[in-house]
Length: 336
Image 1 (cartoon, helix red, strand yellow):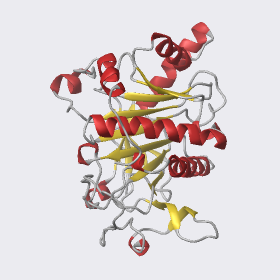
Image 2: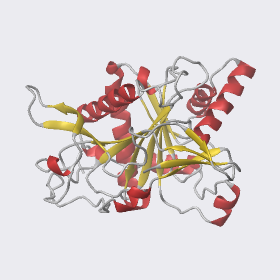
Image 3: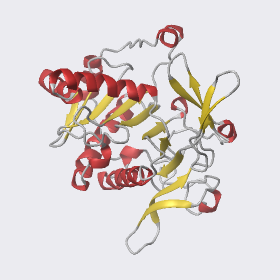
Image 4: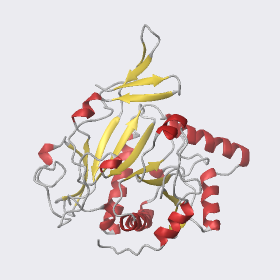
């Protein structure tokens, strides 16, 4: 059973999920000689569907044939739908609540070792559509306050199974880091009447020092105050608070710029481990003007040490404009 406990020194809830100790580990991401090969023991490969929990959602070939993208419950979930959100205070005044939530895995393709950016933009578009479908469906459960969408690539980023996949975790509370970002953005909007993220996007585009890629609907840049070396954001060029609002005709340009950025990182940094997140608003704020949903790609090129952990401040050894210049010179091809 999972449980959330309140850390009263920070106001944050900590998820305790003992069952996740049992999950298998096979997170190596070096592409196979044939990147489209299957792994006989991999639960995410076609033919091994019986090794996973029941299918929740799938995108299939025309006519309802083989699956292209498959969604299942995480076999070792951090949070589970069966738990409730009842708050408890024990005899020593410690606060906890049931480990209520949802934890899903989005298997991004049938190919065991094919890197996300090696897929055509049309398939990445399908993946994005599946992510949005699951996000919208989970938010129909009014116990859930936010959905965190993320992708881990490589052992250093926390990958336990090599077959490429994404994850969604729906939580009964808004995590403190996300709430802090929302509070900061809300205060900025209250003072100025403008969305902080739209303002930062426009500044980056005007400066043009850290812009990596752009198209009609999206821009990718390495932010001025990047916390990690080669940290890259993909931001809409239109105002929209939530990824749930993204219209289907804009999935293709998003897929194209995501593919371009990931190919640059893959080639220039020799297939680095990275974490990717989609930052969004909590329940009820989908139509608010204070926030702009965005994607963050965080290469894991350094390990936080004592100062970072003790202070909460980041030490970044690469200026983002230098990183942008380096990546801008990296030649890439659709096929690696």
